[in-house]
Amino acid sequence: MTADGADEDEFLVLADDDEAPEPEAPGDPWSVLIVDDDPTIHLATQFALRDFRFTGRAVAFLNAYTAAEAQEVLARHPGIACVLLDVVMETESAGLDLVAHIRGELKNGEIRLILRTGQPGYVPDISVIQDYDINDYKEKSYTTGEQLQTSLSAALRAYQQIMALRESRQGLAFVDPLTGLPNVLTLVRHMSDGLDPARSHVLGLVDIDNFESVNESLGREIGDQLLRHVGRELSRFDGIDFVARAGGNVFGVLMSVADSAAALDRLQRVCADLKSTLPVGGAYVAVGATMGATLFQAGAINPSTVIGNAGIALKKARQDRPGGVMLFEDSMSASLRLRQHLGARVHRAIEEQAFFLLYQPQLSLATGRVVGVEALLRWRDGEQVVAPEQFIDVADSAGLMQPLGRWVLDTALAQQRRWREQGWRVRMAVNLSTRQIIEDDSFVDFVRRSLLQHGAAPGELELEVTETMVTEDMASGSGRLRQLRDMGVQIAIDDFGTGYSSLGQLRHLPVNRLKIDRVFIQGLDTDPQDRHIAEMIIRMGHAVWLGVLAEGVETTAQREVLKELHCDEAQGSLYAEPLDADELPALFQRLGVA
Image 1 (cartoon, helix red, strand yellow):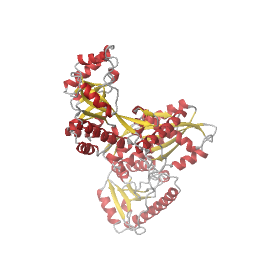
Image 2 (image 1 turned 120 degrees about the vertical axis):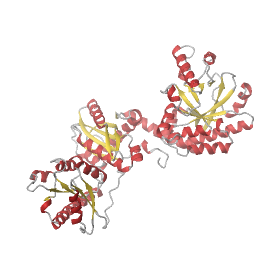
Image 3 (image 1 turned 60 degrees about the vertical axis):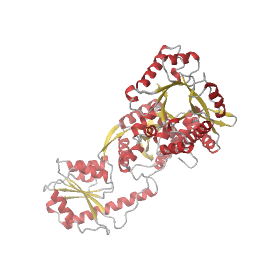
Image 4 (image 1 turned 120 degrees about the horizontal axis):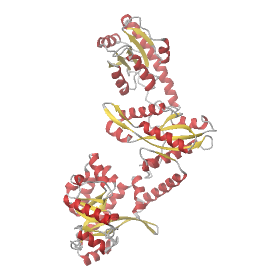
């Protein structure tokens, strides 16, 4: 989250997040890879170069015995300066195939190559030497230690010069150091003076799906390999005229197109072709991407505006079409400005304590008495009261639900204590956001401290979550809902029936109660299908010993059907609209408290 409370994801930050590599200290060794299927060659080479120094630096050796092993070593160690490579290994062309992999697929033009063979008289074509930028070629049997040192010295000198040139380019910020692709400054320059103004173009921003989780679970080195892989794949696509790393895990692609339909078709094919499973570092990574794009005419619009529009489309695609493509429309810009403005107002409302709670009673259908209340968040914005559906999503995407959610829980428990001191003991239900459960590592401890602070028994607190939130919590391995339930806190699934939970799943979920979504209650006494769904949910809940509460009960006819179906509890305008805290004691007095 930024200093002003806005989520960084609200804005597309197009900047290089990988700094240029630090220059090696004088004592750091040169990294040299020996690739040969004969173990004695490895030993002999290392012995011949044991005292070798170039510019005062020794050599650190890496070893591979097949071309496939060499590819793995190259992937794990991007700083290799030189490869001493056997031409004939598992196949006659294994060595040259590896050269093609280095120069072609890896697009590594810096690493120096010295070919070696054990077959006298075998010399590769001069075209191979030139095309693959091979430094030297040696026959093993006739190469002395001194000759090997001379050859390696020349290779390292060439590598040093190439890297100096590369670092000077990085000093001007034109090349991304991780992928070797042009960076965002080069992208802007190319859009300014490298495009045909007579043609229409599309800029696509390609965002790697789930990149953060790859970095966190498998490590940054694997994440870097994934970035290089996507950069290489994008560079191979026919029809893509220019590829750049725009920043973070986002790449920019430029194409000439006839119209929006053609642009959308080609961009969708790029997204589809990127989908794959990539083996890296002993793990398998699912590769996928989401793309935002915009059409433009070269010279007719500022490149920064073009990139900004594509960024707006990308954000919209992340929200509404993950794994797909979204083209920019003018309405998106207005919508984003509105969300940003609303996000700033929500942040200010938290500071000004403009939020407050209302409480809606929950009743036992068997006795008609109050068993609990649900705390409902409201925002007093000037003279108007704003309903949560108008600001919760914005607050959540701006990263404000953690402090706001904690305030709601603490305020609700404080009010519950005041009622308890007046002689009214009722269950308090509080809604949770996904971020609170999935992302807040200290949430369970916060709940425990709040219960102790306000003298509430755990069973007097009910936390309402969605079906998706329960399954995500279990899938993430955090199991925070189970920790809360084991503590004695009650867990209810809100809006039940709109998800896909089965009876088998319910048996294993850490919940105490199901809340039937109001959409199935509205037609309960008139629509047989709604009645059937409600009856099915009630039976499912009771089959696994869960309580069932119906939301949105508005008529006595709905109440009577629910009683007939043996639903346990109800909540809705039939009993009371959401009320201020000081209005509840009179209702408790009138209806009674169970």
